[in-house]
View (tube, rainbow, N blue to C red):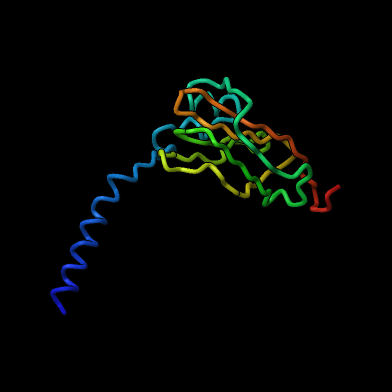
Length: 150
């Protein structure tokens, strides 16, 4: 019985050793630090992708028109585009970049996140397609100061 445990562990260890080679996410904070200190969405997108020209199609973005709580604004986004990466930017806080994800051929773009917004502004989701083009969706929203939706 001990031999079976040893062989089972050996197979598990071999499989685990292969995983880091197949999971290769880019650490954007290290490779593109200027993105995280950019103060405008246009500047952050340009520093992330080399251009801020996007095609406004192929991406679905859902957020409330009025956010009752600026401390936790729900943002949902999805896309059917075959993509290399997806990033979220906003215009309300001092730094525009919110998050960025590296994707692989098996990735599904269907995310739900909550972001903190200091004031009313705009959110934009940018999807970098495998065709090299940037696709986006944009949403303006109001943040109710004081949490009273007014």
